[in-house]
Image (cartoon, rainbow, N blue to C red):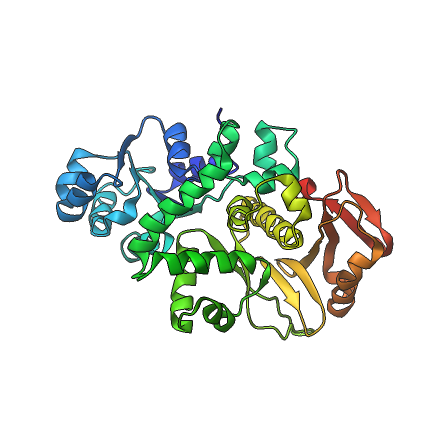
Length: 386
């Protein structure tokens, strides 16, 4: 079963208007399948194959003669030497669009080659795991709790018979062996796995690198490097605090989130919806899920750098969307029936910022349908974020 992706229209438009399109994202988010489905007439080559990667790196001209445009080059980061030759090939026929479509699971490595050689020639598109809206587009009866525990990897929803617990065990093993070893000089994969699990325990919390390093028994510089690895491979996202001239959040640290709740639940040993309901981490997992839906929403709106959080010494609003100075405020609450008190922080920030600047202020909850709360706030069903 094919699950349509929100990124499809963007990718088609980019291929009509740009000579190179770069699709990034974590492993198994569906990058290769999506490009091959949308651009079936393009040739395809994967640099996951060592022989192809070696020729692309050491004999790039011969490689490009074997794979002329239009072509999809999968996992392009494995041949960084190829990018300068792609530039020459593109510039030889600059008016031709959609010449090369590149994918990569290691964002920092891939983007270094793109920024150095393909600046001004490439459009960058990021593909995350499935949003609830995408899942429900194919499977309308999917409950949010099911989407949280099963996660957003397309294969798990295209084939519901897959044992998702075994899937995540294999995913972790593959990720540790392939991406971690190639992205960083990690002396102990066991220590890195412990670091990853410690990050899962801190998802939806302020990032304190010193505490994180101390709990694992590594140097703060190592913790900083390993966080970069998680970001580079699409496994973790940092959310920055929002500031304004009139009211400043005094918190300077970002919040840490795992990118996908299925992987988060696997790391927390939450293996069923019932286990999620009983877990003391349910609130943090829910906030992580809401954050993923908001990231997808902002990406669909083509707004980058619009999502933040607000926090001072005593209060926090989980998410602030800043769209050209007009703000939306969201609190994530693991409840089906939020009360007026759940909007107290929303009211505080709304009054501090000024009501004229607030477009919407809502408590995102597990209610089946949205409904109004006192004070001009709303209880917002997570599906309505889309």
